[in-house]
Amino acid sequence: MTTDETRSNGGALTSAPVFEPETVLVTGGAGFIGSNLVRWLLRHTQAQVVNLDLLTYAGNLESLADVFAEHGADGSGRHHFLHGDVRDGALVSRVLAGRATETSTGRVVPPPQAILHLAAESHVDRSILGPGAFVSTNVQGVVTLLECVRAELDERPRPFRFVNVSTDEVYGSLGQSDAPFTEVHPLSPNSPYAASKAGGDCLVRAYARTFGVTCLTTRCSNNYGPYQFPEKLIPLMITRALGNQPLPVYGDGLNVRDWLHVDDHVAALWLVCTHGRPEDEIYNIGGCCEITNLELVQRLLVLLQRPSSLIRHVSDRLGHDRRYATDITRIQTNLGWSPVRRFDEGLCDTVAWYLNNYTWWERVQAEAYRASQALYLAHVAE
Image 1 (cartoon, rainbow, N blue to C red):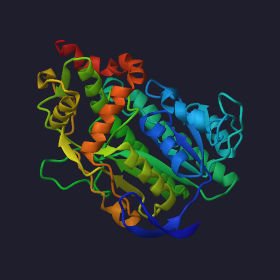
Image 2: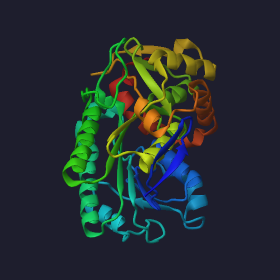
Image 3: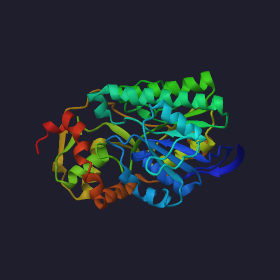
């Protein structure tokens, strides 16, 4: 552990202790945020990346095709992929001890000094249809990882950090004039998804306080960008609009979300891992970009040159939070991070990515629409 001066993306110069892991375990590294994080780490750091993913419906190895080509066994060798479940304690223990082997090649993977934990069930609509899967992955998965870390460090002590990637949804809902969420805002989750993430967050805090595991939790606002599974709002609307299909908007469409480009998010995650202060415990990561769902859909239609007549207002989602807004003062002040991607620019780039990657999203489109179909698409006239 050393100390240096660091300027994060868009932030001020700050002096902070540096934690420099040679190997990082990324859970859920074939998902949307995870694949972008893996790619970012391999481009911007020298760390080895161990990628553990169960490859459920939202995990897609096609999202990592360039990573395998450049950094797999036939490239730099810095990317190691394991097909597995964070709830599999025996597997996680082997990974932490450096005794696991890569799924496709049999290469022994190096033991990590940090975990960036992103593996999760994350779609609110699906949590309404089946809460149990969310509790299993988002709560039991966290317990398994933390127990394995505790056992590994008892046997082979070393500097180690566990970064738990969570969501602003654990805070609940804000009124129109309420101040944005800070890290000390009470937890008040309103959906099964948010409740499961809050449960994981509380366990992370408990393991830090009770067992002395060095843990940090990040809570991000809504992410957008390339490789996002098209069940989430922005890619769902893009892909449906490209097919000239009706665009279902919950309720009056005036629910407000804060939007964060995934590139800004993953840069912040690494900064928290390497420079985050354990005494801070939690860092909010937001895009400082509040917009209503309806206005967002309207902007997408303009970019796609599609008519606003495609919009269909449907029955509101159960437990639908009215507004999220995130105060990022702590990460700005203590770590010097601020988002740098302007929303207008980022949204244009995201639309362009989906326009240029039909093959990627068309293959998963049927599964992407499954939860949406069960909740509201069945009631939208084509």
